[in-house]
Image 1 (tube, rainbow over the protein chains, first blue to last red):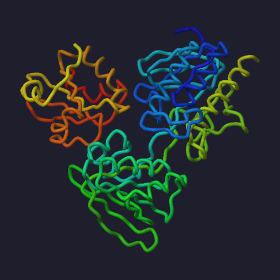
Image 2: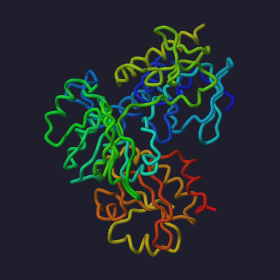
Image 3: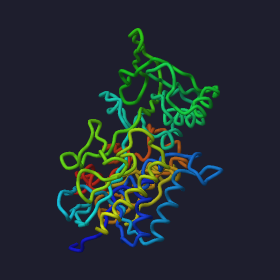
Length: 308
Length: 107
């Protein structure tokens, strides 16, 4: 493909799709690489989203993403369900290669690759992944009907997963290394009122036990260092996310956690014509609505850049 | 060839007694990553149907088999040869990664 596009958008959560809607309406004829298995982003693995403005009764995460996708399409964005596997962003013409081996060239690039689940980092966590260790309650909760399972984490996603899992499990134990939740008040209160949820405070998971499947966890008290073992048949890990910036290392300025650094309040990266938005840049807010907002800003920044 | 649906009733003849390797895709309607990997498996089935048979098992409808094989995450893609599980792939992956996992069956 020798044609040079105005803008290529990489990633398709609320940030990527919103950037596509704005860029398409600005007649920039955007092309968006949605990801072969990650299309729609993190919200595809959620259930009800209760806090996206405009949906007074809530909306299912996958339905919200499907609407954004259709809205981008309606204004002429070209949607490609593939991954970008290589990027050369340094020149005036950016060169990107997709998972099928095709190359696309563009004057500007909007990066919206989002984040991936953070792992605890235990050898046995990886080994038993898919055999009792999971990062997706909505995908896997069903298989833990009538069982006792652990959720590790203390933020909104941990509390949401724990609450969701009580539909299936007999007992859900929320393991958190501090003595209070980081989650929003409304979700924390809901979890505390749920008779199936128990809390294990000041506790961290130091090993996952079991030969072919999860049979228990080795735990350590973060205050006095006491170690103990407890039987569980499942472990759901919800300890946050890491930015998906591995393709950008060495090209774009990242902070020491791997997030893309933008100039001031803009979405401009250190490279001319390269913009970044969504969870890829956001340590702090990490909401669907803030991601969408920054996707909009990235499209407007790209539009302004292309006009000069 | 397109993928086909397998049930508890047909599991023995379609999977365990198959003369070619069979990939069983354990999936469900409500699972986002399963929906993402579905079209990729269709493509692989179209391109490599003579080497490997790809069948889909709905874990909501056929939960007994999912439990029997210890499925706790979906999508899970298990390859059966002569009635035995010889390969377990867990989680949605891009097509090149799946083809690499299945390399030894596609040659």
